[in-house]
Image 1 (cartoon, helix red, strand yellow):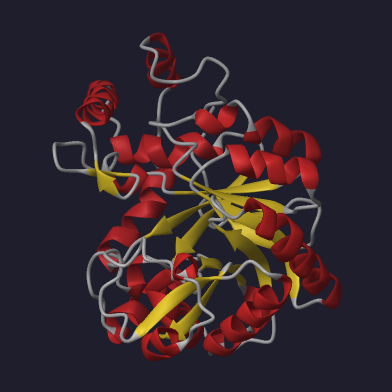
Image 2 (cartoon, helix red, strand yellow):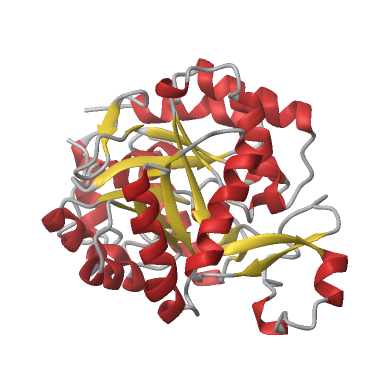
Length: 342
């Protein structure tokens, strides 16, 4: 049965709710392509008009621009009507100040994303998963958003920073949750193994998993998702198009933010061919597949243009026959134990 993109789902054991379709705030902050303030505002407001009430952002996205733009676009809305998540683990600092600061270790500067965001200005992200750094990060995010609290705070991409994240960022978020500055805490990553470790070692409400539970990559089914289902931890899925290859599988498409390997494109093309035989768009199958798992409460769609955003409600509602899912399993393209829409 098709999904309702505006349906509200509860986040773990908290009182926080998210719509099944969430808005991902990276593209409107200049991910790969510059976006004007006016266009960003129009896209966020169109998301609101479509019934989206969950908005995800981060200091990293446009080096603060995403938070500023989403906050400005939602400024006239009742605070109780929408859910905001942001992230911790990076502070945004002026480039000149960093160049002159001898106390900043060069390894603390996050240069991996420099080519990803366009039009960021003279600022740079600095890794900081310390207790004090996380509290400072939330304070600065609230200022950019123009809010007194956020609903969800995620530890952002701590792949190479496990010790600092579990000993510094996690206790800070626990304390902020107790203080009511945030209502739910979690971590957001492009891998499932460390999220599963967080689930085992901390009291988390929700995880944002990007690109690792999709039609193309179901790796989270083996480790993270069973733990989350057992412990009532919600999962928000990002990157359902795997950076674009599932939206348009062809040579040159992106996978995991980089040009897709030949074998990845070929697998996506096989998925597209089977969908075509049933008269189903590959994009609809990519959107609906992760929502069938009982731990998954929402997918966040990262879009920069209104016309792309407006496609999503239709993708949620597009009928998909059970035989399509069965054939994907028979062809080895879906894990045998992966739940599918019914």
